[in-house]
Length: 116
Image 1 (cartoon, rainbow, N blue to C red):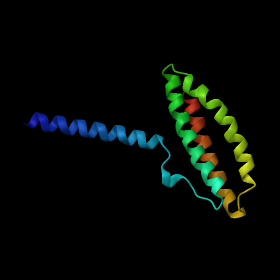
Image 2: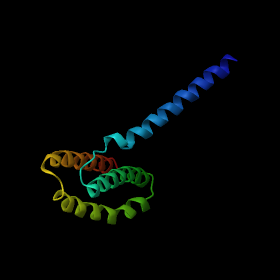
Image 3: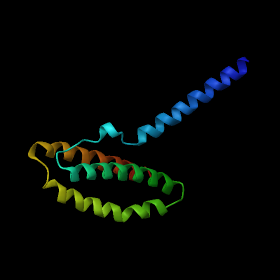
Image 4: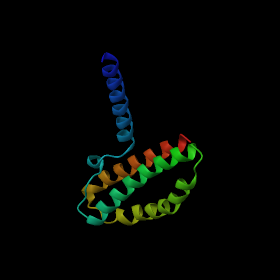
């Protein structure tokens, strides 16, 4: 009986650690800022998802699968264009928050790219 309890506890701790690592890689919903312009809100959600997908693609590339990173190339260009376009739709008080968010995502992408 004691062996099973110890084994169960070990499995539980391992699963929790795996969950914690998975969550740490993903941008949490509460980390995504909101803005007065709905189009900007749509963009920030999309950009956060892209950053998460890019991290996964970099890990896949490190494991030998470059198809995921190639699939994200066109989306990357599109998002860069959107950043410039949407900057003009922000209220002055929202600019710093938007720039901080974009910088945070860019840093996450950069870190993933460097770990290849």
